[in-house]
Amino acid sequence: MYVEDLKNEFYEFLTGKRILLLVHYDIDSICALKILQSILKHKEVRYTLCVVRGVEDLKRSHQEHCADVKYFVLINCGGTVNLVDVLEPADDAVFFVIDAHRPTHLDNIFSDGQVRLLWGPNEDAEVPEFQAVYRDDSDDESGGEDEDEENEGEGRAAKKRRLDEEAIMRRRERRLWEQRRFDIIAEYSQYTYYAKASAVAMYKLAWLLNKDDKDLLWLAIVALTEQFLFSKIENTQYVLAAGELQAHTTRLKNRSNDADVATSLKISFEKDLKLVLYRHWCVESSLKYSMFTACKMKLWSHRGSKKLYELLADMGLPVAQSQQSFESMDLQLRKEFHESLEKLSEKYNLEDLIFTSFVLQFGYRNKYCASDIVYAMLAILESSPRDKPEECFNSALDCLSRRHKETLQKAIERAKTITKTLFKTVQAAIDMKQIITAGSFVYYIIQEGSLDWYMLSNQHILLLLAQFILRAYVSMSKNKKAPDLPLIISAPKNLELGTCIVLGIPPLRQLSPKNNLGRAFEEAAENINYDVLSDYFDTSYFEIFTKDRTRFFDALTALFDK
Image (cartoon, rainbow, N blue to C red; front, side):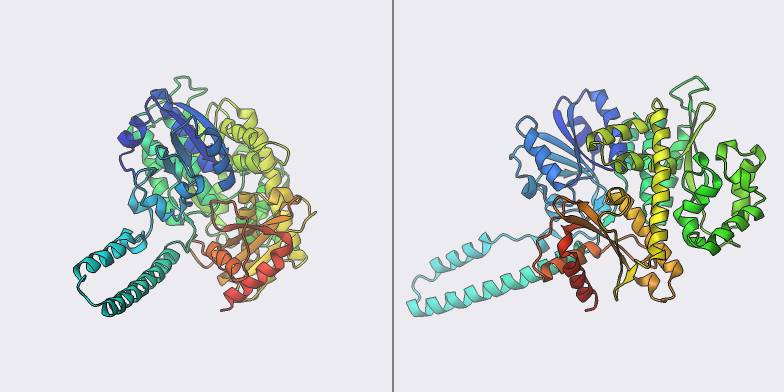
């Protein structure tokens, strides 16, 4: 069921109660958690925090705490699965779900109150009517019994014949209804997509309660930027949401948490460049390794490399200046950098290089774009095979705090390494012709034992690599159908179990980020009677045994060729 009055039916409801916070392992969830923690402390709500990476983590965390806790808050997990069926909770347990993953499971939407969704029905697309997907069989049975009582005087043979005919008609009607139901649910659940960031929704609650400030607004901005950078939402969605947050930025402009100019916080809405971490890197590296410029100028090739230096020359930027950190460049060159690059964007096919974003400033020297924080948090969450998920989660929380600048700076350095790794992986894939066209889709496989395979098997790094490879393939391909082909990418997941992760992303020409490849994966698995191991809330990710990958890809090819 939907909860639209968050103030009374969620915030006030939890007053004085003990709750379990189940938080998904991603950037939006961490930002939403930090906002929720800020507003819960005003009600002195006691809570236990569990980090959830998949459905199995969700089951285990619930099992460990269900005896002590009756109220559960799920952030970016649980909305897309049937919670009552998966968790088998006690009758008095209540689940509050704030989740950006879509489509929402219909059993959660039509729950009698045990599952409460913290958003309105307008945020779920084309939800079918209750009567179209749920039916009470007892009505059919009782109808037959009533008729039996009315016709007691009827002859035995005639009565048996009539009842047989009615039973056949009821069974036929039931089959037709089930077929319609199957088609309705299949149509509703065919696309995986993302709704408004959970952190943005939590910030709106903080604003409604008059407990918002610039720090909480910045968390919402980071979450929205993450959705934009990873192409989880359409450009129009980003522009509209950014416009709303800009209005809050203006409103809070004269409110400050700190009277000291050296540490006071300032958030500005301004034009920015689609260049990774350029304020904390050198211009040459940022231009070379950023997905946007690399694909537009084909910078993995010798010709593309020459083009890069031509661009720097046209900008009047000496090579020596472009190879030192942005902060160390001449002041005049730094001031003119945006403008000179924008002027040359058409000549070098970089028309969409500029986008509007938010910049955070505190103190005299601390200046971070929202995208800087996103890449830093990604580096903390997904770059180290040695750190435990809970430790990475806490470090990412620290990264959002102004008191932990060292954590942020280290994370930015790791993010540069990830960006270089992605570029070099794409370059090697092109040079060695490892991007394969299989009829109606393109695929790329990261082999076991390849360099940095562990890093590339993480959800969001794999997503960035997939987007990079597809853009690079389309820019290089002579095939006119290339922009209409989806990409399927696979990487080793668990070497001990012998499993791999499979991800599908939609074609470049499809402007909407809605993804139906998860549904295609399910159908392909059904066609070969394959039991899927998938543990993800986003259905565009699949996990299969590596030995079965060729068979699975063959099933996908057959499905796409229909």
